[in-house]
Amino acid sequence: DYNTMNGLEVLVHLLTSRDGIFLWAIMGFGLAVWIISLMVDRHDDSSKNIKPVSIKTEPYPGFPTDLQAQIMVLMTKANGISKIKENIFEKRFMHVPELNRMGAKIKILGDSSFVYGPKQLNGAEVMATDLRASVSLVLAGLSAEKTTIINRVYHLDRGYEKLENKLRKCNANIFRRN
Image 1 (cartoon, rainbow, N blue to C red):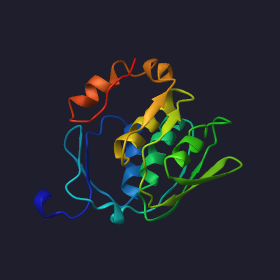
Image 2 (image 1 turned 180 degrees about the horizontal axis):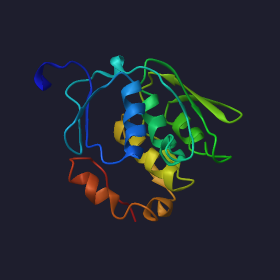
Image 3 (image 1 turned 60 degrees about the vertical axis):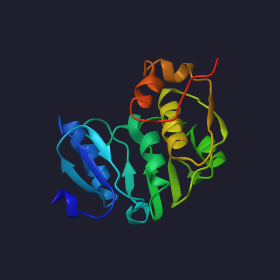
Image 4 (image 1 turned 30 degrees about the vertical axis):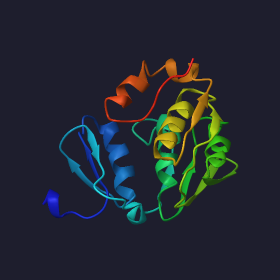
């Protein structure tokens, strides 16, 4: 029953087999997943229940490299050490120094990153290095204490048109500074 479940509940709509890989990764964190609609619903501060996972990026239908930066932000909330092995692109961890600047504890060894959690992220001035990294910094900023300033957002604009307007509709405190 939806009302009696404890912890973080993630509601997703499973559309394709590729979405199934993302769903598998989310379930690995030990989160309760209901296939209902496109929304994420967090009822309480239950990050202590998020389990660490180990993910390796692979060509379709494996876990997409395009989601590894975003999933890394969730890994900062997991209780223990999570791992991402990047098998597709070199230098795909350019966002790690920026997340560490925000209080994450992430170490890179070769083609793998190790995320030590849980960590409370803190607002900081950070720099986007590419499209995927920029959206991970937005997610990190939304989960952080205090204000986060993301520079070089032109990377974000290449793939997420007016993202700040869409997030404000979800009650996010986010705006674009000129």
